[in-house]
Structure formats: C-alpha cells, structure tokens
Amino acid sequence: MTARPASRLTRLLDAVLGVGTDLDLRSTLQHFVEGAAELIDAASAELLPADPGRDGLTEIRTPAPDRPSRTGTPAPKDAPAHRLRVPIHVRDEKFGELHLAGRPGGPAFTAADEQLLRVLATQAGIAIGNARLYEAARQRERWIEGAAAVTTALLTGESADDALTTVAERARLLADASAGVILQPTPEGGMEIVTASTPDDPDAIVGATIAPGSPVLAQLLGGEPVFIADSATDPRMTTHVRHRFGPSMMLPLQASGRLIGTLALPRRRGDRPYTAAERLLATQFASQAALALVLADAQHGRERLAVYEDRDRIARDLHDLVVQRLFATGMMLESTRRRPGAEDVGDILGRAVDELRSTVQEVRTAIIALQQPPAGPPAGLRGRVLRETASAAAALGLPPSTHFTGPVDTRVPDPVADRLLTALRRALAAASRAHDVTRVEVAVDATASLPDGRDAVRLTVSHDGTPGGQEPATVTWQYPL
Image 1 (spheres, helix red, strand yellow):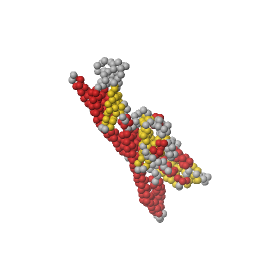
Image 2 (spheres, helix red, strand yellow):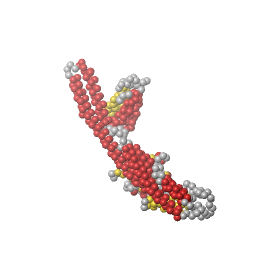
Image 3 (cartoon, helix red, strand yellow):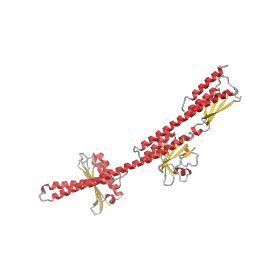
Image 4 (cartoon, helix red, strand yellow):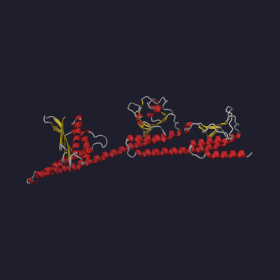
C-alpha cells in the first residue's frame, strides 16, 4: 500500500530536479511539461503562457501527445478524456497555465494528482524566474558588448558608409533579425534605405523609400521608435520590400538633438515577435550607436582640420622661408654675373640662376598642391595635372618635375583640360617605357600662342632617358583657347 506514494514521491523529485537543471527558459519549460505529464501519467500536456510576447514563446507541448499508458492497456478511443488545469506563477505574476489531458476512458485525475502538480508548478515558477534573470543578463551583456564593439570600430577611422554598415550588421546579429537597415531622410521629406545588412540580397533593399506623407514618417522623423507586429500587413509600411518581413523595430539614431537616421530590424514573416526586453535593449543600442556616429564624425572632422592646418603651415613655411631664400640667392647670383670680371664664370652663374628659377617654380607648385583638400578629387586643371603626375611616379620610378605658367585653372576650359590630361597620360606612359630615365619634366603654359596668333595652352613632357622605339624624348601638345 505504501509503494505507490513512495513511487510518486520519487517521480515528483525527479520532475523537480529536471525542471531545475537548465537555465535556458524554453528548455526549462519543456522539462516542466514533460515532467508534469510523466508525474500523473497524463496522455498529453501543454503550457500556455499568459503573455507570449514577453518571452517570445507560444505554447509548449509534450513531444508525443498520445503517450503510452504505464499499464500498457489501450483505452477506448471514444471514451471521454479527463482534463486538469494548473496555474503557474512567477513570484506574484501569473506566467501561464498547464493543461493536462487524461487517457480516454482512463481514471480521472485525483486531488493528489493536482496537489503534486501544484508542488511541481511552484518549483517551475522559481526555475522560470531564474531562467528569465539569466536570459536577461545574457541578453544585456550581448547588447552592451555589441555597442562597445560598434563604438570602437567607429572611432578607429571608418568612413561614413562603412560606419553605417557596421551599425546595421552588428544590430542585425544581436537582434536575430532578418536584416539590419539604415534609413536617412530625403530632400523630398521621405526616408530612404541607404545601407542594408542581410544574408539575402541587400541590393534589392537599398534604395527603397518611405514616401512623404506616410503615417510612420511623423514618428521616425520626430525621433520616436516604431514597433510593428507584421511589416507585410501594417498599413503604415509603404516600401516595396515590406512583404518580405514580419515583426520589426524602427529605432531613431539620434544624439545631441541630431537625427542621423533610423535603424530598422525586421524579422521574417512568421518569426517570433520582439519581446519588451529586446525592444528596450535595441533602443538603448541605437542611442549608443548614434552617439558613436556623432563622435566619429567629429573626430574625423578634427583629423581633417589638423591635416588642413598642417598642410597650411608647411605651405607657409615653404613660401616664407624656402621661396624667399631661393629668390634672394638667385638675385645675388644675377648681380654677381653682371659684375666686371665675371665673364669666366658667366655660364656657370647663368645655369645656377636657371636652376634656382626652376626650383622656385617647383616649390610654388608644391605649395599649391598642399592647399588642395587632402580628400576628394582635385580642384582645377592644376590639381588634376598634379594628380596625374603623382600617379605616374610609380611607373616612372621617380616623381616628375611639374611647372605651370599663367592662370591655368581659370584660363583653360574643362573640355580643353580633359584633352590635355589625355595627352599627358599618353606622354607619361611613353616616358615610362624609356630607358635610363633620371628626370621627367612636365610643363603647362596657359599663355602660349599658336602660329596664327590665337591664344593656346601648351603641354610639354620631356625626359632625359633613351626613348623606346620611335617615341621622342620630348612631346609637345597644344590647343587653342
């Protein structure tokens, strides 16, 4: 007579131990459902959470809804099945309800069965609370580490486009989303997807727009988060890619009153909805990422300013010290050449003066190059010529010496400048094929004249090496202005 109570107590202890063996919430609940069905020999059991959206869970069932009887005796299929419901509480909150079904035609559940289940449900409530705390801590740790990684990456010199891609990619992985998308305001008053991170086809997403007047825009442009249960059916969503996605978060990237854009994290249709904890953590991540973007932009601005200031200082030093001293030295040599008795060294002094003038021109060219912005395409013909000669230095094995005469930036129109650059590339390529080259000179003269008297621009490229084939050592190109 005492065997059965002892056996049931052993089964209760086994079920209690099974519930507390795992810190993963879903595994904990599965152990609980299986243990409850085993404890009272129920045919099936399922747990229905009171708030499925909180933990991202729906019902939890026993894997085999028609478990075999312990006696091995099948019951009539048409006999009614007894049912039992037991609530599960986590502290003072109702977590859900456990539903158990008896065997058709089998014995009814007893008060002792219900008492055993309530004991097990109490233990399950403690285990669920612990699993929730563990999962919340683990989630918070992942998001904090992700935000720190994004901040580190953004402050180590990434470009603006790379920075947005980093934010989208990291957020997608943290949120277990189908895509990480960055939207930015358009001049027309809408928003456009400028960056997308997704295992699928990101090119099909980039460029999609939310048209002006969309109901969701007022919230997004106002810096408010938007949470969507199903992107495909929500009337506020107007992009042509909305049918791909289900639950979604649209979070403002806003810092110091500045709206950089919106971070959208959509999941596939049918995927579980975002929990309240996930929404909070993702919103905090977006705020941190926006601040990192602003700081990175400010840091890049300071670095660019430092480069500008350094280049300006070097240009001033070259102008104030080097050019003036070279010019003064040239004047001294010129006056020396005119003195009585200087005929014997006149040729040497003349060549020295010419070299100094050439050096002054090169230094002035370097000063102008330093005044060009360090990033982006060079402005004007002068900057474009300098870029071409700098690019050719690797093939030539030495940097060409470049001279300008006249206002080349204002006097030479763009179509003529394009022709000149084409001729320059051909001439530099020919010079790179020559042998024993130790000097290459490029001269652009915007004050030249054609034989018929028309104003022209003249390009001269020469080198001191042995030309390859029939190519001349000096190439001259000119075009009317």
